[in-house]
Image (cartoon, rainbow, N blue to C red; front, top):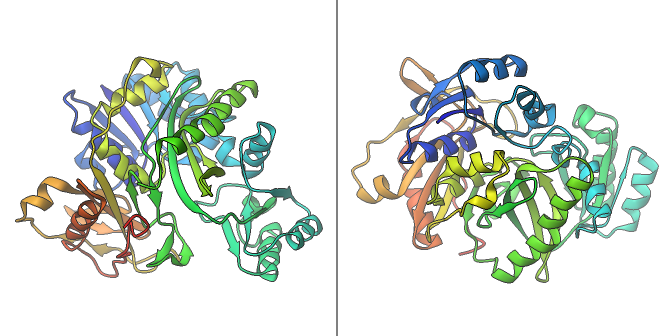
Length: 421
């Protein structure tokens, strides 16, 4: 099959890697890809969505998969479908579930999907008044896309008001913060759940747990994610059933009523409070680094899942997973997440260890290639993934692989999966 993947991160790399491991041979294109994706396919440089759709038509691309949120919110799915192309992802209207936190929270309220008490407003007075009614900590969110960084957990009322003021003035996140959500803080444990949807049917993947904070013990600032593991033992069949019945089914039914059937990945950020799942947020694409650990756990065809979801035929397939666990450890550049870093050469030691060769791999993200030399470009550079029969074994293997990767300023957490262990 000829497949086009949009994006440049470890998420897109891991989707392509999983497809390359299938029995069926695929020809894969990336827009734009990264310095390592050209080992899996061909990188393109076609930024205009209409031109990209024309390329896909001329090249007879059979399936396009959209990795990041920005093209989805911009409406790339609508452009491709207008050309009669098969593409995985939600329409521009359905992508508002991530593109606007205000839309998402109001949707949750309208369809009685459990979520935290909140106010959405552009009024600083209304936001301050609601803030005073809450006990601390208090959650403040910018309305629009902020690359996973538009959420502040304020420890005092004053800190919450500063965050609100800076968002509404445009100082923090520009236009993305000109409307804010202030909501109650929920005390529980957080989960990442992913439902692959075709508008009517869905397949719920094993629950994962992400590590958003930069430092060990969940210290420091929020990041795009410093590591993840799956499946998590913090979820039992009863909790899966509650998420299906109280969150996913009403969301799919509600989006149809809104005239925007949801196709693609519904990424549900869940807070479990006293055994009850409360929806923190929706995203409309795979999480990163969660995707990097879910893809290698799939034993059924990854490409077939994406294709069937894109053609409203999910009911025809059974998606299967191995009984193993996966742990992914993110390696980031020295200045992440505060600013850019100087490109640094990546050296990966040659492996002489069967356990590392067989049960670990690297998913590359923020890298470039120059004269056959791979460079860390800044941000999240790569994810070292380990598989095992227990979370501990998978984690230990992931860190074995980490020990073989070297570049100036490399930064990792050493406690990924600590919640489960």
